[in-house]
Image (cartoon, rainbow, N blue to C red):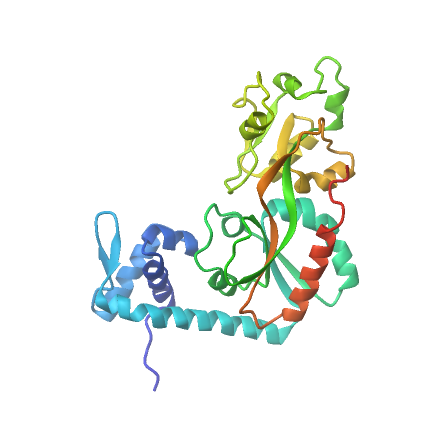
Length: 316
């Protein structure tokens, strides 16, 4: 007879706390509150009859029992994630889970996705967007575990390109460019012919919390432009909203050129003056080296998106 196990949620909470050495980080990873994590740990300790975590003023540590259990727990959850992935694969090896930021999905991928679907109707695409996973300001400690635990086949990420344990291909480098509705160029009372003219226009700010995002302050410093109050204007915590505001003619936005290419090609946005600032970060397509399932579909999508990225995308 198999030994009865403690509740799975409690074990998962403990594994995350033990690995991250933080109740707060574990709560963020599992999308629950810190109080919920604390409750699960106490529930597990009560079930077992002995402590697993020692709580200090500003830190935690594991008891000898907790330390001894962690390696096997990590192995067990990794095996569970792999088993679920294999079960899904047996149903359909043509189902592909692709993860990316909402901005890249809506502004770059979706306008082109019909081309992929037309040529590969047998591949069932599942596009998932998650700013916390893809646009985090810090690199995930274990990307391989991230792929398995969230059942990810391919990820597109704006970042440094340093993703250990993964097959990484740069899609394209990026630049920060000013963007506005072409109507703003027709207003003779408020010219927008040179950078100094920004002083008379509303600045739109992308305040999305991701590493490497462009900012008006850096752009103005880069080109030694003075007389523009960088703090005024409208601020958005999603780049897609900022781009929509620019399309609506509400002001001038500084953003990543690749995200605006579809709107530029359609005439909804334009670049009022050609002063582009190269960004250190770029867009990458990422696959885990350890993946065993969905490799045919993942390779097909990866090759396609790399090919699309190699084409002219600015529309200028």
